[in-house]
Image (cartoon, rainbow over all chains, first blue to last red):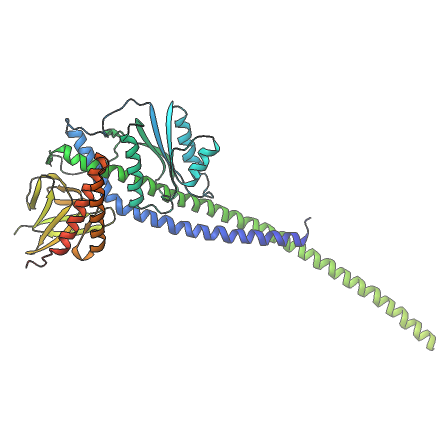
Length: 301
Length: 138
């Protein structure tokens, strides 16, 4: 059986950790809410961008744009979005492993990382990281998304890569988030996710021409894709951390219960021992007293 | 006068919602007005001034590049940035203008030229809205 002070120490340390995980859980909940709120603000805008772009690509045949033309798909660039910190369950590993596995099938690939964990992962596998963004993860803004998009397009324009994939964690609900891989460039109609749910199904005219409208839409679409990837990843990270922390909390509570029981049992048995000591000591001293008194009395008599 | 439902949306917020009589937009093919009963259409716009007429009163606002979707039931304008004159930071617009002009003088590549032209157009449009601002149909 363990020492009573040792158990006391363990209880103290688990209590401290419990407090930390509890605080982290609360923070994650708040941050996740914020990210989801941001997402809902921007989604109305980017959903229509996607929808309109898809509509143009479906109905207009003679459109031309450098980001739509196919290139021979040899050189693939991956934009991998992960978190800046760990302690979020399997969140980072899931998304990074997906990117890693896909990469192994490609002869030439470039890696663009967003987030510290992504960079650390590839560095530990002796895989060179070609471009990294470190500040865009914690609370992504449109400004960050624009910056990332501009840099990627710059590389794409210089004909350094044939296709660009974004690997990130998509959040379906608070408890369900999965790593996904989405093709960013070249833009193909089937890759654009948009529900064609409008009640108006007739032909829509484009002014001045479908191509000109497309020129405006394409950069917006790309920024929107990057932005939503960043936001989804941030929200998923916080959700994953929240889940990890809540299970850590439960675990800590269970351990505390077991340890407290053990501690009380030990304390009880210590008290019992002490009482036994006391009463036996008393018994002996009483006996001695009796003998002494008897002795005394005998003498005086 | 007939009215139609207008929404102006940016990625950050819904800038405007309401029944209006007309909206004047800086389309790529030249400025044009949309009124109730317009044919369904999508306009691409360049940075410039929009004029919204509501209850006989016309207000101006700055709108960055984007597109305007005219649907049978409503009209929706999408843009990266839309601002009322009172929300425009004149100093920032002035600085952006000077920066863009400076960059244009250097003129490194075609792509940069296009970017700077856009930035300059945005700055000019912001300044125009800020200074020439006729409110309440005066």
